[in-house]
Length: 172
Image 1: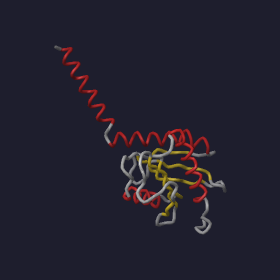
Image 2: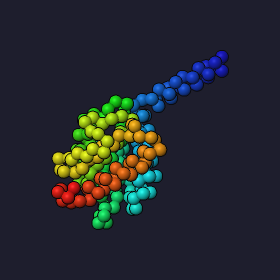
Image 3: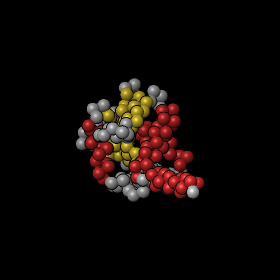
Image 4: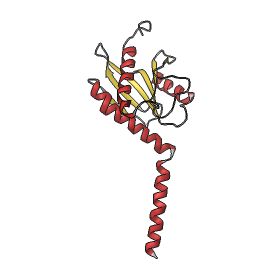
């Protein structure tokens, strides 16, 4: 009888664990982990003196703060937001990233990364500017082979580094 109860409890636990890993929060955390790994093991290896800080638990801060060195040696802080939605990333998420970038005095630009879906009103590598004139690049990896994700992210960082490194809006 005890064995039957134990088996039933183990089955119940397995079902709950499966349900928990399919929740949107768990999926989002997994996506953040994937992007953090790409930043640490890809971007920080390619860009000399690059650092990344995981801010995913903080409000109004984007998921990650990446700092790379500009051509002039000055640091360029890029706020990165990652999404792992099955539906397109909505305009409210875009506005939130723009607000986060403009709300951080050190931020020079941003990147919105969607791992599994498109981004509403934005094409791959499209750049829009925040109210304060800071560039935000949109990157969707839904149709990109997984082994290329890290390379594509590095290209996106290089683009934002190049644009944000220019102080004069006309040069951008």
